[in-house]
Length: 195
Image 1 (spheres, rainbow, N blue to C red):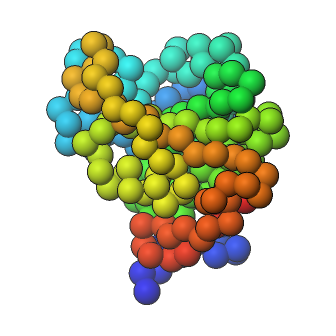
Image 2: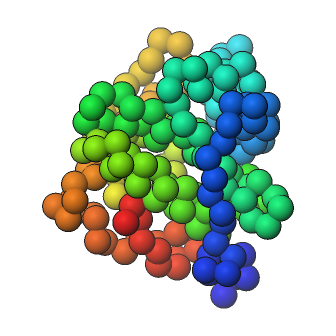
């Protein structure tokens, strides 16, 4: 077994609420986490100004002013990932800015952050959680499916050079078919999502 692959209780990331004064840190983390995606798809601040690979501190500060809540994942003293949530309506929240530094991927950190965001959405009484991604990122879409998300639409947006895939998952208390389903992280280890 890959020693990086399993998140055990002793090595599980600590997830904490981020503050607006951490906007520069969050922006750097998001940019570094999405740099490989930008290279793969030929994205830049010119052709994809709203892609996370172009994230700035001003962008994150605007998110905070708009009611977005950010969370940081740490292992020991190192911040290794983040995720954000925004209430779109009383019944729907958006999972935003899910980012894990490349060196720490495959350890279940993204799944833990997703679980945390699901809990926050339930506390806000949302019935659904939505996420959007580059439609051509089939491996990422498959990962989100393992987290309980289902594709709902693909759209070409005028300001982006790629098609966007929109996915949603239900957050119903006990009624969601994925609620109790075990999911696998990228290493094949089983973990629970959104419990």
